[in-house]
Length: 256
Image (cartoon, rainbow, N blue to C red; front, side, top):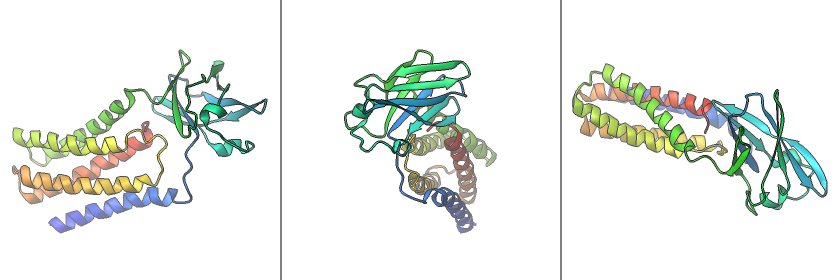
């Protein structure tokens, strides 16, 4: 029974891993030169950047991605192919403005001098729509919130399966919480702020999922002795399949 369940889990992992690798292994990944995360903007908001280039104002659209409460806009250098040279974001976006367009009208947000780095590339800035304030990087609360959501979701779904598998002792539950907080916390931290991640990293993520399963399996078999090994393995296979499938959905629909 033990090898068959492990084999089933491994085959499921391989199936999950094949999907992202097959889709994104079509060419080298080129990150955006500038990413703007907008908080509190209407869902229909489009964004353009007006760049001053050789005395001419060039109006360039940014690619939009909406996830939950967050709108993310990306500018790739391929979108400004007419620029022969790039010298770094501080130089190239000097005097530039963000133009936000939605049903309420238009809003212009100047990019302040000094906000971007001299040789900056793949930089992220955050815009608070209501105040129009721009800041460098991502909000400090963002990563802990998203990590907490993913870990809590994993604990809830694995906790239900843990209970249904017959685990009721206080010691077993304390060990369950300790083991899963460490493992799912580490996985969530690993993929935290993958806002412009190279898609090939998803293959590494699935390898980490496999390693985390082996670590969790070892910890449970050594420490949690309320049920037999067959029940423990059956629980772990079902719980990990369920929690990692849920985490993939969260990665797909929540901000990264």
